[in-house]
View 1 (cartoon, helix red, strand yellow):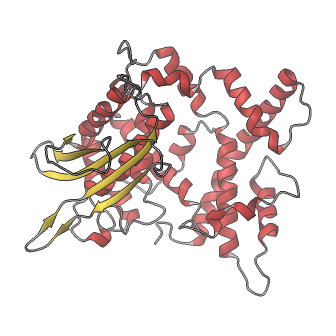
View 2: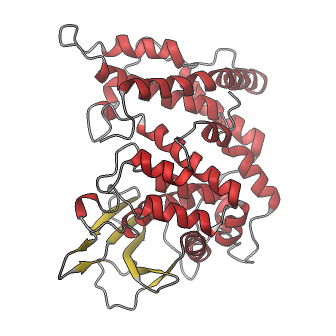
View 3: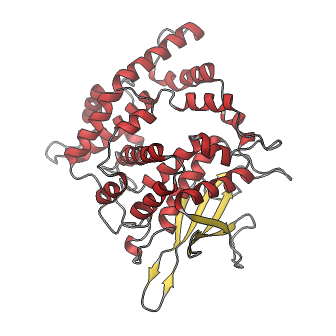
Length: 397
């Protein structure tokens, strides 16, 4: 199922994002070309040069790296701080479980989440945060037990939350990059969607039954607090001194957040529009027209054009594997939802408990039990707008 109501709505959504982003993307590319020429003597910037010189420009302009930020994000500060942020927002308390639970590795921890007012046990979860040999890479949330309630039985939801952070060394805690902090908040957003559900049927409880283009709303929403000063004061503290993230470092981090955001926006719109069109316009009599459509899309939206011999689509597995065929647009759709939802927190206070309660009741508790658009409107008071995403991305289209 999809939250978008028609192919025309998806195409219009993507083209609107492209139209609003393109002027700034052209300026960003011109700035990159000027930088490469003035600082590196490069007069003809090719498509394959873009990532290299973009990183050079980012370092030149902002003087900040992920490694530089790590001492301010020890796990011993990040995790309790994240639990405090979540507790204030959604009226819950998260703590290590007293149950003697069997785990598959000594580093795995087991927690419970309770309603702060009533003490009701809402859910439990395993935290498996560190990389180790033979462990699957990446980060994800997975379902262990779904919520079930029948006449004679009640089962609370249990989730797995898994990451691959560098483990602690000696008596020093693990240090996270800011990107890893965002990953942790992202996966916990999925976990909250799973554990705070009040739906008693597993097929529509938690994230089950939620439309593909809406399922990332809670996870992407949670990432926003990783950038807010009020929340950063809770989740950051120098590993040696406990000092909060310095204002100078914070300002540089914020400034670098939207570096080349319009170029990145167009790149994702290009992927999404290509994916959607090859499925929507497929005609057996004409064949796939894969590269014909890709060329049309690039002429319409791209500012960086790869060479003619480029065969990007051969390795773009989203168009035929997994759940993203004709659904790559869901990444941007969910970003619009999360940015618009967060804008209500910005209006009322980023840690406002009443706004958090409303999000919990209208989104996190409802799972796939109601129409996704109706649930969003119940929270936001209207249908989603792309304006907050453009503003959060620094795009002045």
